[in-house]
Length: 117
Image (cartoon, rainbow, N blue to C red; front, side, top):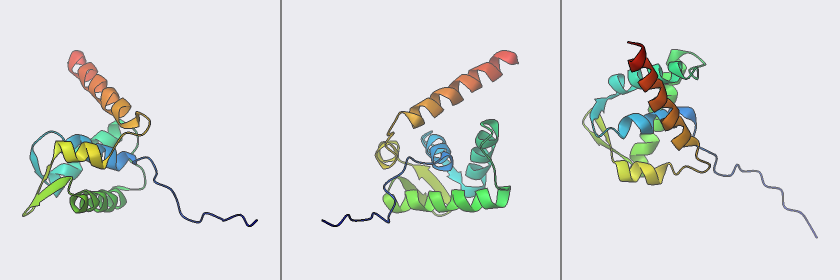
C-alpha cells in the first residue's frame, strides 16, 4: 500500500498582521490605507512583532487587506476600507483562542497606558 505524501500546507492560524488588521477594522470606522497601516504598525511595534522593515510590512499588510476585501470581510469604497464585523469574525475564526488572547492583551496594555498617565 502506497503512502501519499502531502505537499501542500493545511490552513494555518492567522498571522499577527492579519490579526491587527481585523482588530483595527472591527472598530466600525473607515480608514484610508495610510491611516490603517500607521495604526497596525504602532500596534505591532507595541507587541514587539514588527520585524522585517517597515516597507516589507507595508506590502504584507496591503496584501492581507486585499485578501480580506476579496473574501468579503472588508468593504472598499474608493480609497477607504471599512470592516464588516460579522464577516471579519467568520473570515478569521480563532482556532485556538489566539486572536481573543491578542485582543485581551491589547486591551490590558491600553488600560495600563491610561493608568500611567
